[in-house]
Length: 383
Image 1 (cartoon, rainbow, N blue to C red):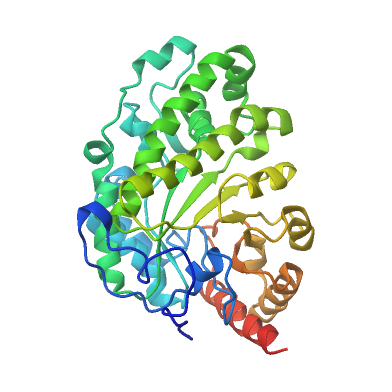
Image 2: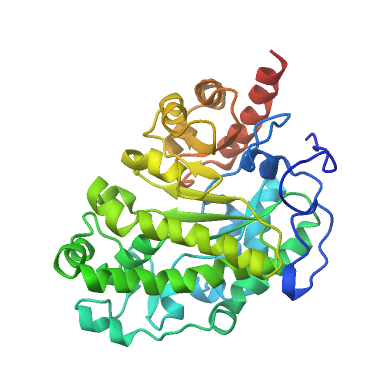
């Protein structure tokens, strides 16, 4: 893999992605900053690539590591999170790592009990059913005390990455977290959570504000611990139309970006690129492009060329191969990747899937995807 020159970058960041801020870590020098330069909107020698859920159940070593362990106990083990984060990097020449964790550690920090039930997914023992249930939340949250295990995992992983690629931190967006906290788990309609928006709008804004107040120091703390980029997942944007999204999701997405950037400055930390991924949020692409994030992720239902027309040239786009395309033959994957890269055009782009890798995916096909991105993007640069 080619390694870009770090000294020539004009990005508003320190060369190695930051020294670890007030936690005082000295991290190994970053060897491949292609992902970061693309995120900042700079030209790169090839298109960088990583995959959502790249550390996951499609890898035998992931299943072996997680065997017999409770999911959230794994999340609370810095050693386990570090190992799971590094596993896909040992197999594939990815251009970024993303820390192994879960968005629902934030509701846990607020005092809600969440378990991962096999075959069902995340389950809250006592979800927020009525507006008075907000009084059960334990606020304010001391993020160092409640979520320090995530920071420890990030620091350990930065050290063990040895500068190979940047490390991404992440969180869920306020609306997505609220929907889980009210529904008590996944839902095809999010009807209970949307009921709150219509029936108790003031209480909904209160909850969304409480979540934002936790997310800001949590994300700043991830950068202080060593994260070199941050992604915010608005996974349930598709359950909202333009009106509800504009009232109950977008203001908090913007607030998170604005306050995280201010928090980094106040802490004396170098800025990091922020990524917003709003699944099925195609109706709000223009608003997302102006929400304070350097990168807008798009899912596989959005045409990349049309997305570029709508967002302009001020942001980097990330995405967006259909995860199911990885069921195709390796040759066909290469053809689909070439078509995707052509559609994104010459503007800075970070290749990814349009959602996460599915558990039954053949790892060889993930490798074919990564290799095809590197190969075809280099060919395009030479044209």
